[in-house]
Amino acid sequence: QVQLVESGGGLVQPGGSLRLSCAASGIIFSMYAMGWYRQAPGQKRELVAVITSGGLTNYADSSVKGRFTLSRDNAKNTVYLQMNSLKAEDTAVYYCNAVRVDFSGRYDYWGQGTQVTVSS
Image (cartoon, rainbow, N blue to C red; front, side):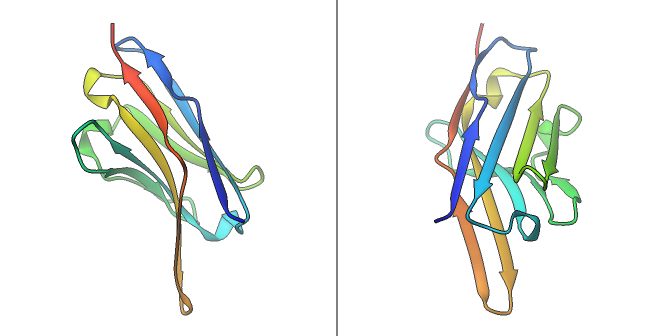
């Protein structure tokens, strides 16, 4: 059974920092690209950043470039999203995603989400 368990969300003041973690089990973690998405109230879920199985990162949301850092630890089956200089507009539910595509198909898994609230 595949599980992605996010942690690290919470309430933080503008300008503060949080580090989200996503621990994976039930998959060969090193074979998966890992991504973080977020969904603000009334908005669609959007990709924030993704890290490939080889460790290459892409910050799809330009508003987070220079503030967020995505990394992975294959030994711990965990992906991290370090979020600095947080703004009110970063408030959202953050979801972890694991995806792999090969000759046999697409394998796509999601965590349950963790709430990040940026407010004074």
